[in-house]
Length: 254
Image 1 (cartoon, rainbow, N blue to C red):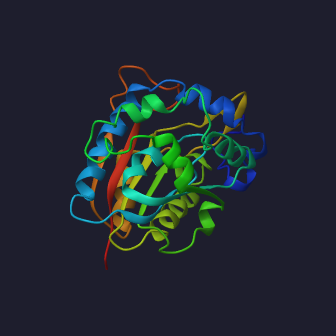
Image 2: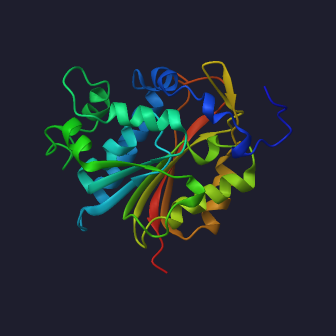
């Protein structure tokens, strides 16, 4: 395990050893209460955001990793969804798990938690629709194209790619800059994370606080933001963090 007082930059993290299957099994085999909170908050935000606007032609989930529920949240609101990734194990996981095949679908419970909401209920076969409407883009978060997508999500990415605060802030700005003016967005972070273990391999994290997040949002070209801090008293995902933080809002039109 690296020394905690030395910042570990993204390029030094052991991404070639990231166990995507192991991460998905630990984090998403069941719906944790915190994720259920996030899904309720985010889905309501999107229902309201698209009440008076057409669906986005293109949406993006940045650094998707082995997690499909952000893409499912955006499914009724976009014609096409790009999932970006850089780690090869995550890319392989996405290609395997985004195919439309027969059999039990592990993500059905996640979909069921939002399926009764307006417009979500109109998607009768989310597995097939996501399979038909997605693409996987191999791309570093720091190399995202500018103003390319009209809706975006980034869940547990910028804060979990290094322990360098400047790199974290640069990743968040790169995500915002990849969205068109006025685009709705969602960003999720682990509050106070001290890093995380994936199948015995340690990965770095930035210790985001509500105060540091508010300060960062004040510097970004965003508007109408709101922050959900999850209730971590029921069942924590793992040791080493205090809560999850979900930011919703819009890219500024200026």
